[in-house]
Length: 252
Image (tube, rainbow, N blue to C red):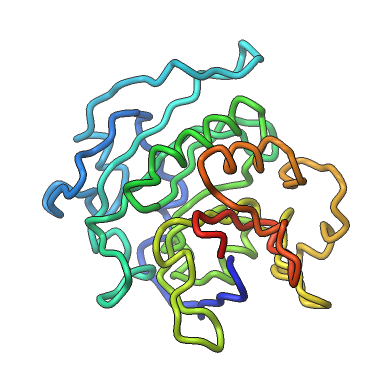
């Protein structure tokens, strides 16, 4: 979420099964400006068939039982973004990339997550996620917001970590930072948006008092440091409101 940006729920047929898909983990970056013909077909699983398999073994967690962190960066096309992108958005599908990565979930299991971000921040975001994996910082789940019909409300309620979503700031005309693919919302339930008595998502009320717990972002912790090292600011540092889930390149 960012600066009170909201998005109305939209019905989206055929995407419910996407959350269960996973990709073969890769590290090769697709070339910038790849044509849509080379983009990931409607299900990102197809990207694993086309992308070269290269394991990224430079980063591993302290626990030898935790598999080595791996990531994939692959192109996307308009068909992959049916609810999150439309003509007129500040970036087009050719400027976006799908980052598929391993992470630890809230139950301590190794899982596969997917985030859509702008191509120039795809590798930095993959590196951030690698740092979180090494620190065993859990991510409940991470799926493109299209799985939730483009609804920020539904994505937050599902405790879904997400990134790109072309939407305007509520009550204004400017695009939110997520419209540029340069913002990530991390574990929205554990890290809610708080302004006065407003808490989003509603389940986040249990985490308004910022005490340590799995998935909670706290000042100076592994998540804040990992994002800051790649130039991202944290919404938990804002003064007029707190958006504990929100990390953005511009600070908005």
